[in-house]
Length: 198
Image 1 (cartoon, one colour):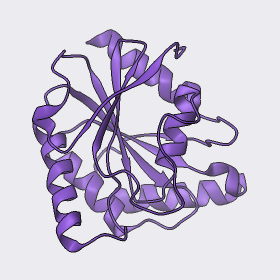
Image 2: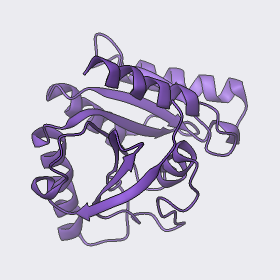
Image 3: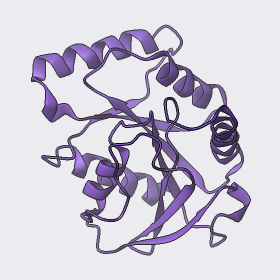
């Protein structure tokens, strides 16, 4: 897929206030500081589309970006560590869960995992939550340029092993690097393939 246009449409805190045009939505989510904004900017070839920050928790709302005037890339708040109050975190959690479960236009979740670290309980719990609620998902491993191929493979295999404890069939997985743009075509082509089946 070639990204010809990517434009910000709306930010809000309620799935019921999301766009009403019925276009398919592909949502991106991950732990705070997983490299989500950098990945979104890399996918869209627009360095300023999603705001990047060294401070975790930059994204606090549901952000819709219209791609090629055909589908929405949805940037969701990160889960896990962020320097905000427990009340704010609880509101984020409800906002994310409501969007995941109740948003009819959601076609697939892309869950971002930092390829450099051991499996994290919070990532596994969120992926299990999606599975338990029948929400389609694809796992994206980020930052693979930060380590050797052997190290990447070891961390990916460890994650697969941890996930296999609760999953009979593992979700699809894609390796990416926002720096080298590795995996960009894989992600965009996968979205295009799914769109063609709708």
